[in-house]
Image 1 (cartoon, rainbow, N blue to C red):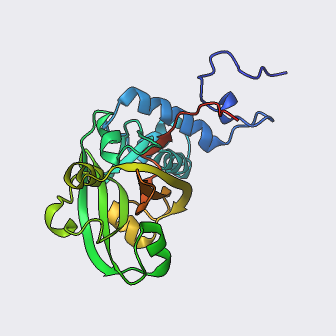
Image 2: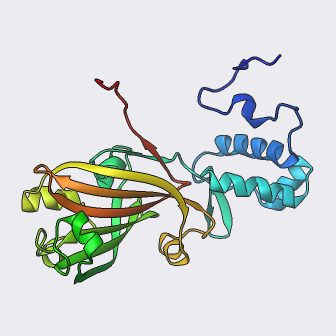
Length: 257
């Protein structure tokens, strides 16, 4: 009988490294494991050998190598660079908290940034009005920005907020900076709490183009409804994060009930 945790098993890794119970390992998976070890040796940003060379090295068909590379790309172990493939760095860890994206990226020694796609003012529809504390038909802002980490595009953020709460967003706010810092330091608006929902999705063709990823790449989608310290609705945010570049962390505590 196989032990539950074999000798040498890395904490957090799949038990028996994904080997089926019948013990027969798919050929592509064996190649994937060997390429993954090669990625560890190469280090971040180093180029991987060409598919042809990997096929010769591991004595398999190029399609077998291609399947292994596809999975490693989706998992974020590799990334495309020009016409080649390079070893990717560790995923960015974003805390599930009221801390901003900017704070989360800075904590990991990366440089956060945002690139403005659009800032539009429009009459607020009823469903959105209730979520951002506006009356139906009152003006609202929609701000769309690409999220950057060390100039790499890693996500897409849509923010909805009432014009009455942030009347000079188009004039006073620097779109490449933290919106939360602007609310707190510029307008004296403090965040109280928020509701968040996370799901996995595929980006639309437009979203994939803006983020610079293939449409088949899984995304992590976060919906957030925020309130100020008085409990009043403040903003609605829809953020797409690249599934190959992000993981999310939170800290749990035992409830009092």
